Length: 571
Ligand code: ATP
Ligand code: MG
View 1 (tube, rainbow, N blue to C red):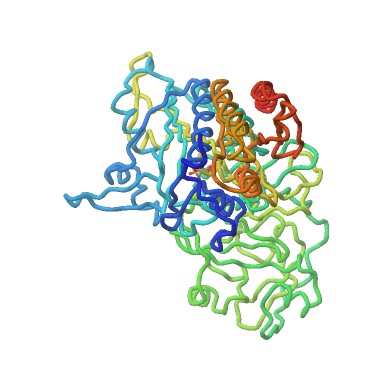
View 2 (view 1 turned 135 degrees about the vertical axis):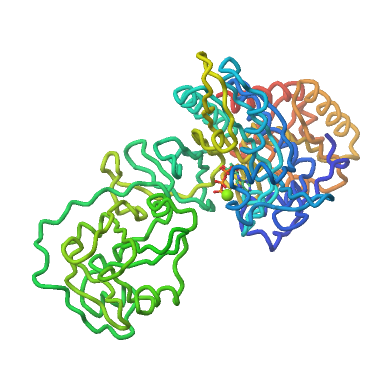
């Protein structure tokens, strides 16, 4: 590969629009270019890395027994209406009409299409199990596309869907995918953590996310410092607090005037109590009507847990007018006493012997409230976000909160889609049964960015060997010196003959410019050919990550690089 004949538009300056390191370096190294918000062109070297990720994914999926297919990007609305997702998917679903005014969408995911295929083609238990995957372009009209390839609108996903005669077989496949995913991300050279993820109404431990650890990650995860427990913060369990032995406060709650005092901190300071004795009453609107959620003042509500407990698809905090209508007071003074809507309390609230709540009257709070004694039936559950102050729910040791980029997600679907789309098979006794399903996604283009978030320094990208656009960049110090030029040409051909991709920087540029670009591009090995070293029959090899430099005989260069690379790739 010749630099002068390849489109590699490197940039000296940092592009102003890029916040994340990976976005900045993908642009600066000339790997991608933006066409529109969240929509990118892959240039030759960017595409090479993308193809390497794809190849690893393909190999491991095939090894795990999955079969590759390619499904259409454009999907008819009818299928989405059958599952009900045409209504509930929201604005992320890019919808349009064809020339016959038929509603269509650009696929953000393919459960509908694949289940439709399988319901038409699979009829007998003899055709199961089946695990079908594709590597394909998805479109999601994300509300906030950002960080370049990390959250695009158009992106490349590997999505797999498995079909089974029974639940046990679906679970075995889930386990096989769990292992395949570990192999994929290991081979991609990523440092990652597998976390328990929210599985919505299905529940149980049948959803895991694969998180690349990075400070720019949009996901938060709770990870135990001692045992193997790790979970997405959305899912991480808060321990049930010991119920206090303290007697409830004597007498009924007292109403106190707290004029203009609204936030937890203000109320705590005004009433001279600890924030954990103050209870926030959050009013939500759901499709089934309003509900109130009680959370301790020093805790944050976990809306995923609330949504799951309520079985709600829509969950939004009520606005000031709705709050006034339901509580008779402004936001900041709501409380559970006398509130005629379903009440839910976090378990830490239920454990409080006494608490301060809003009085449902402007400028007033109640002190000395006891939930069991004073408040209408309340459903108690774990409804809050865990913090680093909480112990691990498994072993009781310390938790730490980390940031991660979700690169993969495996999910047990159960009968959700087979029931709504009527995908059935006949069992050995000739009875019609619904097919059990699982789905397994990988953010192929997101991996390219995640690898850069983990591998970079002030000079540019540091690719893991498996993902580099090429493992070697070859830099002749001078193009006018005939022996140098010839040696470089021969090395280029030798390396390629040995099966190593090599980028020969044959541009008419100063060596300093080439070195800078080689560092920016993050190519693992830099091979420099110059008159001085050639006189000694040597070439210079420098490793991008360690910056270690060695001199090797010209004839040994390709063997040396091959050996080093296979050490890096296969350990
Ligand atoms: P996120 O929470 O990041 O939006 P998701 O839960 O919507 O992800 P899935 O529907 O499980 O994602 O999709 C499978 C994989 O596709 C994700 O694990 C992620 O790696 C990738 N992915 C999802 N959305 C995007 C996006 N907008 N840009 C790039 N990759 C994405
Ligand atoms: Mg999403």
